[in-house]
Length: 462
Ligand code: FAD
Ligand code: E1W
Image (cartoon, rainbow, N blue to C red):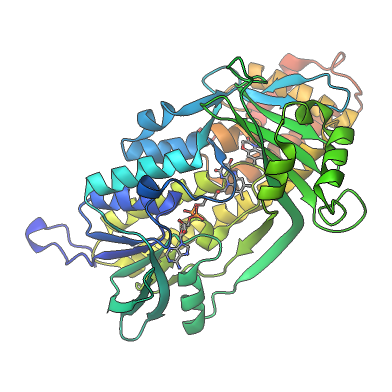
């Protein structure tokens, strides 16, 4: 039961948050800003004191959904000040003839490259300013759901037990809270490995300064069953990521048995990128191969006791650059629900799962599909024709036609709605293109009129 009488506010249970990564630090900020008591426990040392130890991708693409959540915390401008704008994808075919494909209609529709470490530090500072208590070098080791306590292991080897508040897990794909919850209830956990891994490399700034390649693009080297991408950093370097099958016919990580084979592979397939990586051997040898998988759960919460969000609830493959964005959307939604239903966390958790789960499933599917689309590079003529028509309809029927990429990246239309809307638009485009091999003999004004007559206006969030 929710009370609105402020003199009789229901006691707000203190929040015990596990994980001070990107999602945990933002959620801590949003909750503390709303007056919640928040204690955060993070396994790693404080990156502000020890230098950032983050693994995985060094740079991340931030899109509208993530930015919107940051705006709610009052942090958007500070983040944008340390981000690099990316206008589109720069495709690098093997013959070296690059071309920039714009993401949006103009520079209001761009994504941003941000440093994971820098963003984490900014968010930790914000959480502390808002009043959250941050405890580093502290690992969640177990939960007693009956007694309502958590076991915390400190780096010095000591373990302490303390009362668990409202337990919220932002502890990533390998979530310890999820493991603890699974001992009490069946969460329906399913992990689907992609079978492909990734290796992070680097293009440093040229000796004369500046950037070695266009800084205002996400670079993609599509090669069929695998690809490289590069995201710019404010310091002039690029984080390059190779995505490649783990096993099987060459090339795969299994067949790149040593750094000589790796250089050989790059010389054959990514000669322009290799030419910009003077320390290729060192970097290749220093960085492990990361694994990619999709995590599905049937349940994200245990009544009003514990809840998972971000990667802990729905880790996805990175090919749409939406994992952090989705996690930030989670954090904003949860903060709003907990504020509205402060006296009834079980109801807030259930509402959160109801609203977010269909959208988590949707972005998981979109991200898997985007790997195929990205690495294929040269698309078939039918696909190109559809893209051409989509561009024409975007111009002629704004408010009614928006490509799936733009809906995902530049709006807050729920991910599941993006898929449904895209299906309707695609069916209509196929009908418009029936019997045509080129746009030359398609009446584009009539096509746009048909779009406006057939489809409802774009949904809320656009
Ligand atoms: P994490 O960032 O994993 O944070 C979890 C935190 O919990 C960590 O700090 C960890 O130390 C801590 N922790 C773990 N266990 C415990 C414990 N037992 N006790 C206490 N603390 C614990 N997303 C995008 O939006 N855009 C991109 O461009 C993008 N690119 C990506 C590229 C790659 C190669 C990969 C792998 C992912 C990419 N992502 C991207 C996804 C993004 O990295 C994740 O979705 C995001 O980091 C999830 O944040 P999180 O806070 O949920 O989890
Ligand atoms: C983005 C790791 C990563 C991050 C991304 C994207 C991609 C491919 C990858 C998807 C995209 C930004 N994408 N780019 N161009 N078309 N789709 O938009 O974040 Cl691999």
